[in-house]
Image (cartoon, rainbow over all chains, first blue to last red):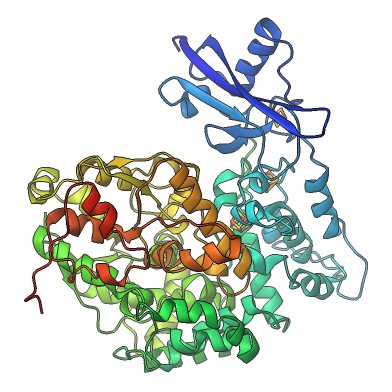
Length: 327
Length: 303
Ligand code: SF4
Ligand code: SF4
Ligand code: FES
């Protein structure tokens, strides 16, 4: 491919003496083919133009997980991303990962990220629920998430992590699912109990940013959905997230539409609803109060029937891992 | 091309955010897009039903999609979460025939006709920007926006995961940008355009949800936005109706008028503001719209 000229706008960060981060932007020009990687360009810049530009790298093959950074707005692996995919009018913007403390330029402190992963006990536990029989299909779920290389790209782009320093984050939850779904795991229920606590799986905003960001197809949000299903099946339903979720299948059978009028009461209880009175009054100013009697859909009784059929003969509709093809 | 759709406004469009539905119907009237009601359609179950009852959620989706299919039309919605939920189910029905067969079997036992996975799930925004003749659309713009700075807020479930949607999604999506340009406005570029409105954690993580609203609105304001538009009734609820609540939580004034895309489109078409439900917006866009040179249309005799 023919070489082209690109401008790299790189965020230069330096922790000053007082501990504050000093940030400035610096531009570098490189001439490269569009199918060269961002890492190729960084090596060119560091090797030939400015040795002080700092970033992490090791494997150059999307395996070690060290080169994640914000490239043209979203977090990607520098070694896997072609310049041509992300250049906008010939400009590529590089910033360090989000939601992590910056050390220098494009390098962040990955300690807090790994600490979150460690809180879910990233190893098999012995215990009463361990199954010694590992059948042919036993890893269909495990394989979906065991591709993770702990690069932190998902956590960097996570919209909940941006506003919540306590949210455990997508990678740790995907890792948790890897153990919950492993037949050999001995404490599945105990894990689900822990994951049902505040700031764990129920705090995910379901934005799917992690699904888009992950360079390895892990789809953390899909793992979170499956964890929630398993948690509710074990009866860990004592939280606003769970109660809210549990309202839907009831309402759909009752008439078809969601009863938004009683939803808040059912989710938050009386105390919680009273706390939200200010918000409710604010909405009432514009007449934004749902009807207590939502419209009933024609033939909604059919749904009660199919619900009962599926409760009697449960169908496994979980997505399974695709076969792993080496890249 | 015939622009006939089975119209699925979603629970919010039928209840608290009904102004978006009014505006959708008003602009479609003018553009010759026919929106047919779906009397059998129920709530799609949003993000929740897939968690609580995964198989039932697919049965519900197949019943909704089947109603549109039986009428010979694609389904069209104005709620991103309905769009994502139904697109996700439809994607699975099209790519996993075994699942479709099993779901159809259960549904048929309950008297629900089988779904053949032959239709597409559309968003009205896509219909207007990709399927309506753009010249004809431009001819309908009576009051171009005269450089109004508009923040496009797409909403997660219009964009991700990209592979399930019947139109450009993910980072390739530019529908709102194109619409704003066509209306004569300027699409501001800001960090929050593809982020989360927090709607689905409104009750479980209220402070965080309000933090998201404030962050997105403030990033739009800092980039010079005078008004924000979204293609989603739930984003409208968060970014518009909850904006004042978010202001109190974060202790900062925001004051960014937020409208559904169909409302701003209707304004530019010169449709009566009462018909577009502009009075139901929490942050009144009228002062800024008047300031940029075109007061809204208000005919006293509407209705
Ligand atoms: S889907 Fe959940 S975990 Fe994934 S990025 Fe969004 S908020 Fe974070
Ligand atoms: S889930 Fe994907 S993005 Fe997140 S750490 Fe693992 S490999 Fe990286
Ligand atoms: S250098 Fe190892 S993942 Fe990029």
